[in-house]
Image 1 (cartoon, each protein chain N blue to C red):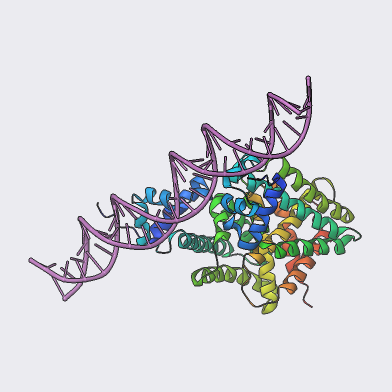
Image 2 (cartoon, chains in turn brown, purple, yellow, cyan):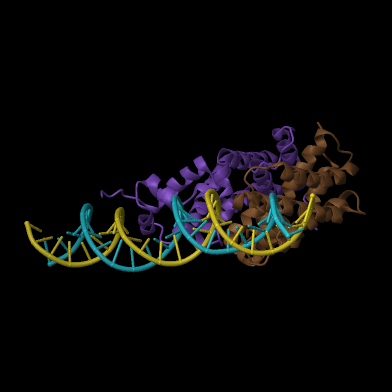
Length: 189
Length: 189
DNA sequence: CGGCTAAGGCTATTAGCCTTAGCTTTATGG
DNA sequence: CCATAAAGCTAAGGCTAATAGCCTTAGCCG
């Protein structure tokens, strides 16, 4: 029984590959173990919490990847341009890895790592909003608005929620315009 | 073994009660059967496709309930007022039945019934948009925008996506203002 | 009233999964 | 060179969904 030299990160990597290829329902410890070349119980040496912890780790990883993509998209842009780029990057990530994105909300309750990763993602958005003169509590409300729009569009899009024939890119353009207009004329009380 | 007199609708009802009380993961045929006072295999007499079909039926039912709620909220209102009411009703439904709402995107692929129910929901939104002078393809894009905002906010809200202490109702107010402003100044090309 | 059919229950079984327990081997550090 | 901890294994228990086959009830039709 030669050592495989597995690490928790590698286990998550195999799990993500599996999800990408066969969907979220195919995520079983048995399948991950087979892909890693290891017997199922051996996974507990690296992911002691079993399937629940694996799902948690997946959510953390996906959140980090998403935050990276948004940060990349925002760099070197400002204002409406940056917001548009962030929204497109968000949707692009979800479209490229639909099952992976669907795995995101499946985490039981948020733990420290997930909260940290989510905070980084929110940080990227808050940074983009700085050019609109939004800060403090209003920046939080605006960031929530951006996330709602981005997540809602991505989620419905990959979930088959938009069944009609109308062009999706056009919808995305309208959505971006609505959002940027809303941010520019932000309803400060 | 007295007859229980089960119907598919009743099975879905038991399943929804179970989901509401114990979450989506607790949805198993065994648990539904126990609640219905029946052995597990007996469920196949009413829901021949097993767990997959049950999930499909649940998605249809929830979509119908949601469409009902939105229609109720919209009646007797118009313009921004109607849009605001629809958004609040959407969020209220998701908040009242968080697990049920989470069950919505779990349907495998959309079938005829689900498409029909979704069409009714979209119909309610399109009707609300008529007062903005939007029709044809632009009405579709606008309806998608409304759904994206409503779903995104509801989904993040019940999924624990908004962890900071800022008031959620305020975020909702800002979101509604951004959306209605966007609809009034709709970017027709 | 008698009997037939179909529907709605049941038990038993199989296959697959997660998880724990306990053993064995490998690698590594002193 | 050996001790120990890490990393693998097999075995077993308890879930689950799903299928097969049987039995009983309800209701209808002659």
